[in-house]
Image (cartoon, rainbow, N blue to C red):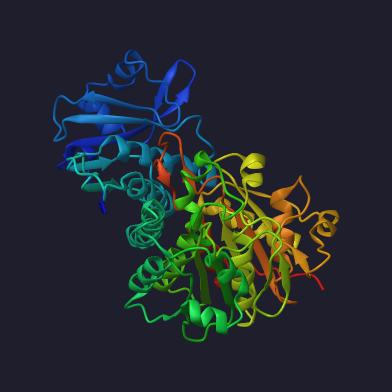
Length: 506
């Protein structure tokens, strides 16, 4: 991962190959932001005019490179656009910094060292830039045989007006978060032949090693014995048997307890309700929720907030075969509820039902599940925004605010009660699919059935943002994005400091 350092020196006096400065969109062309003074002076006051002559506008993600001359150690200046800048100190302002830093870091692949002279006036600004640099530098090249450009090796943040000690702490948190997001991306990007449930479970165990967490992995025999009918049913059609991973972080004198549950379908063919060929091409990402909760709980263990966290990652491969579950089969979920399977491609909710029911046995204050659950949510909110549902409106709004602070686009969705009756089954307690319309909401209503009474619960559907099929943007690469990791960590921290305290209404 790219190394990060803080400096209060002038950007032009730091040894580097490039200096990154920020510009914003304004009438008449790009406007230089704080941090550019010494760079502009080295160019004899011509930077703004040069950028304008090169066609730069200052729009978000725009990167313009200008050769440096004069008294400077860097060969080029990299001007990155922040768009029409939001009010300083807002989450939108910090997201603009994060995104600009990511765009610059991507453009500097193959560069040894760069100075980031983006505007920093408080530790949160430095943290946002750090996250942007580290996330933007990510590249998945494990299976490449050519010599592609390596990521930016070293970044120095100029933070002359930020409190040094507080900025250092903010940078450490940002580094932990970025490492967690990049780890989740790596797991999602790994081909499914190498990321089977057993391999994923082993990777989760390895990643949690040395942090004092209790790690348990249930294999197929233990799952059958434990009554995990959803996980077993989904996984029974594959030659690669299912797993359930439980990771528990228990700090001293923790007064609150959060359970995180993530869908871990390592490949989703749809089962006997087979997807189209095109519909399968990105289905290695269907374990993005499990990747997020495992990465998040490890980040929490490193940051050490005083709140207990238990992560559950049900892992299975959904394949068609002579042993696969059939439409009209009835499964018994952990705890005894029965489900009629009407569509084997609605499998994520089956493994989540088991894990949510098991999480409730730990009696946490809050359960948050996260999953690439429904194409309906992607249709409703697009490819960059996740949906949030909860068994309490206040809790849903608190999760939404946590996501905003984390810099992840999410939007509240209702659990429409009129859709619940469409999930009724004549042969079981509930069916796994319901009405034709409102599929994301029906999935949420299904999951709500397995939440124990008195426990706050929120559901995050990341079907849209978990995998980027389009061109990279900002700090987001093509492929796995690590969606949800930062929000999950923020939720845990909000519970620790009392910011998030909603419980379901009786």
